[in-house]
Image: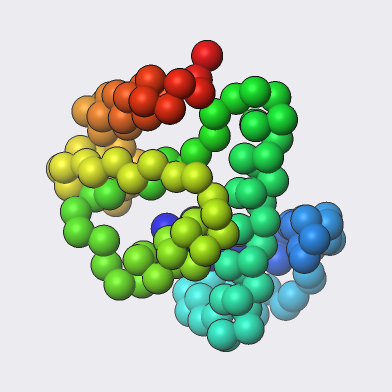
Amino acid sequence: MPVLFGRNLDDDRPHLGPGLMWMPAVKRARLVSLARLFVPYRSEDQVALGIALTRDVLRATADLARARGAASFVIVPQLGPEDQADTVLRRRVLDDGGVPYLSVPLDESWTIDAWDRHPDARGAHAIAAAVAAACVASHSCR
């Protein structure tokens, strides 16, 4: 989650800002951009802004789905125990934001490879089964 969350703070390309307004890319010297890539420091204010922005995007997505009669929840794959940073971000973004989500425990070996932690076919199957079960349980998927 911290990696995905960090993307919402990148401003070197067109991006969403407060109030989900489109913002232009911020131009920086190449050396500064390179340094930010290798040392992704975020201040407390930047983290708070990122949490609010991420929460707003996820809430708006859920609202659009609901307005069209669709179920909506964020999938939170759990590859092993959740560490403290992930727990804090999940609570601040999803729980505190009232964003519906579905935690799906996955075996840590169910990834494409050591460098690409996206779920492999076994992980994708487990996620699909969890989504189907949640839809049946909530009677909200068509």
